[in-house]
Image 1 (cartoon, rainbow, N blue to C red):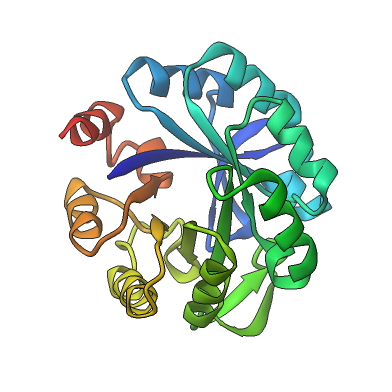
Image 2 (cartoon, rainbow, N blue to C red; image 1 turned 135 degrees about the horizontal axis):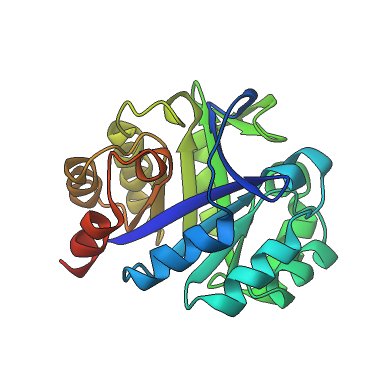
Length: 244
């Protein structure tokens, strides 16, 4: 399973939110580029970078940070936050991101999402499906739609997506353990339809045991954010787990 370190950015600084609430932000002293270098030097290979300024603004804001990390590390970067147009995706790819997450756009503009998937392909585009009480949440989690999360994911797998990042918002930044039952349900339903899915769990990971449980339930990746930045999990532990 891929261990994917998370860096969320506001005003060029590394930050973690609680359940996506900008008013409950914890800022960390080290800048995102220095953190990314440490992750890369320790042997981690993947980075999930969320442009929270972009999520709020509706377009990429911290593109220069993506460029600096891509230029100074060997990390495979995936970017999310504020990607609403073909030009937005081109910008983050040109800045050095290997992959990008289609989040709110997928819930609000299916036609454009299909066109982007056709242009970039499922190896570069990731479906971002974030849920609250079983429904899809969008716009930086400020709005909860009527779309059932599990059916929504399977619908987009039918469109050609293969990789999905799924966050249970109730778990995000809470250090309370991941939503293993939700991920098991998603994988079971996709499998019952004969659909390929690479499911990346996001939210609540606090221990190596959590990573083992996510592996056992069929997840192919897990994003680790607050637990890493607050020292509950070390880069060394994550690197050793990744090596198996």
